[in-house]
Figure 1 (cartoon, rainbow, N blue to C red):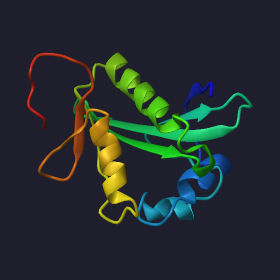
Figure 2: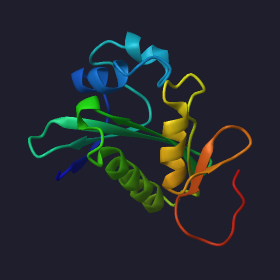
Figure 3: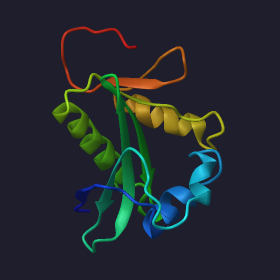
Length: 148
């Protein structure tokens, strides 16, 4: 599958976000996403992955603060198992590197219906669990800096 990476600037809540993020099973994302109305401006940096037919098959979200970035990955259920999530994570890594960020982190919510599998997915991709529940990975290789 050939994918295209698109930075949305500014980013608005649209039908594709509602389908992929808003309709995700309860416990994965903030429940407030379900109440957004189409056309609402959404915070943070949003990116989407499009397949060959220009259909949105996933989203990456990055919110930088103090040199680190929280990230979220959302994949269309019909595109799972085809490398979309890994593609999104790789592109978020590149975005963080280009911005000179230190760490990427993700917090898999304890209410996530696939908590263990999702946590393992991040761990297999170089993230490490830290004591506050976050999964953290250096945004780019550099001298040894302890995780925040």
